[in-house]
Length: 262
Image 1 (cartoon, rainbow, N blue to C red):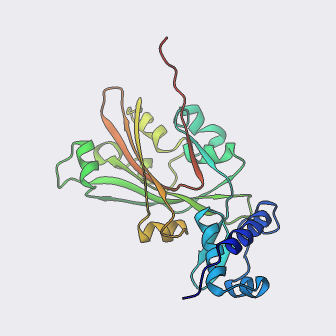
Image 2 (image 1 turned 90 degrees about the vertical axis):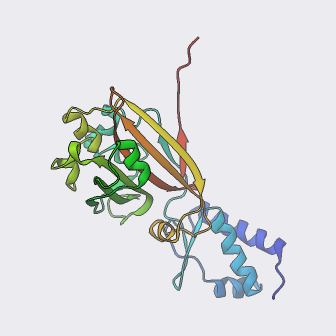
Image 3 (image 1 turned 90 degrees about the horizontal axis):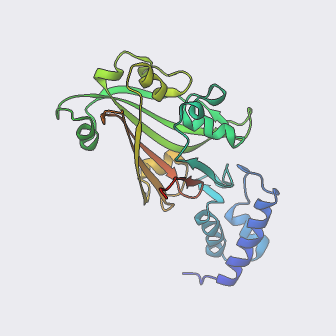
């Protein structure tokens, strides 16, 4: 096994990092191959691989099997405003189809619609329990890979995976079972149906992605993700939506604001 060269790894990684941050290598752009970096720097093959692995762990580089290494499509953080994002005016701002699209608009990114998988199946046990369903009952699900782009011409890149669940007796046969749920998204449609959400509870864990999630997010399987589980209830306390979001930890930031009693 070739000896690793930590000093060289750090120096070359720092040089590539600077070139990425200054735009010499643009977001989404192809980087030199391992062999090209090895020849250019006069280093061992394993050392060149370790340079790219260092930048992968930082979230700056994505390596695609058989295709090489690329600058990550998005450098920076998407701030998820956990306090205000679900306010009706916020989630439909500018005609947005929900909080995610409105969030991207405020960051100067472009929402890239992608097909939503919609169906009726027996939900996971925790979802069934939240809805107080019989173990054999079905629920409606909406599953999608949510994409952002830098501009209108950019094909976009997946920044989170989301699956939302709704009781059939509430959402069945409504726009919630259609591709386009309309301005404000499914939360506004629930309000139209008399089930406005008045309370949100979210829990967040950090974990490693499943192989399927890593492939869908186009990230290494050793890059951590946030798993955010969302429960939304009416004023009467009935849970009318359960959602799970899987988000690469390197590009998401969570923001919350509370008013405290004196």
